[in-house]
Image 1 (cartoon, helix red, strand yellow):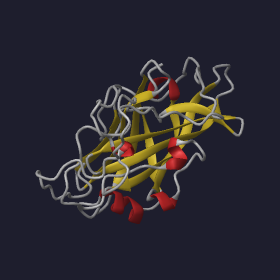
Image 2 (cartoon, rainbow, N blue to C red; image 1 turned 45 degrees about the horizontal axis):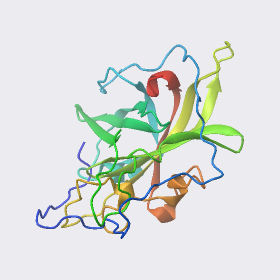
Image 3 (cartoon, helix red, strand yellow; image 1 turned 180 degrees about the horizontal axis):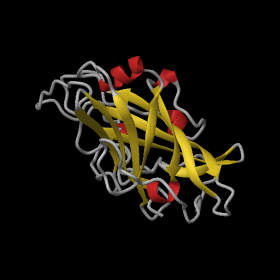
Amino acid sequence: MKRQLLLVLFTASFIGIGCSSKKSETATPPADTTIVTNPTDDGGPGGGGTGGGLTTSTGATVAFVPVDWTIFNSYVGTHPINSPKNVQINVDLKDNGSLRYYGSIKISYEDNGQTFTGTFESGDGKNQDISGLKDNNVMESVYNYWYTKDSKTVFSGLFQDQYGAVVLVIDKSINQGDGQGSAFVSGSIYFRNFAQSMATQSPYRKCWFIYTGPYDCRTDTIMKKTDLYPTTGEGYRKLGTFSGLNRAKAFNL
């Protein structure tokens, strides 16, 4: 799904990438954040269905409820939406071995007989070691993990496509009362589109490792886990909510 047209000038590159005299830096959670090592159970019924226009055989798919269509239209960006329906979200994440989750978030909708899908990703590898850049050798998914906040097990993480970034927030669990535990989770998506620019984003860093310029999507509240939701001052807006997501399928447990 194309959301925001970016004018590309291929001679301009590496705009907005943080520089440092250090050869390698490590991004870590704050010291008082307790990372959850086993936030899940055996799953349960439901979830994972493809339904409607979103075609995927992995992860978990549920209905997505936009905050309102004006905001959703801003998220789409490249064309006005006419009569959208069947909005869905697919979460397909995996543990990279360090309790950080990589993979994709897909947001899909049908309009005028067509299905549009935006795919936002975070990789399982580490940033390239490039002299002069910050966050060398840091895991791309370093900010994507389960942790405890206000006595609850929650999750937040950053994902990107070529037009912008989204924050996935999971803040509620549903106990089915069948002895399976909290097999289903609920949450929200926040988005931030990139500004139109004559510059090309660097292929060596995701936007949360870019410190200034049109491709900077950093959010201290999410990266430092000081709050569960990004603030409007960081350029993010709430796109919508979801519920009943099968956690075992969504996180490939």
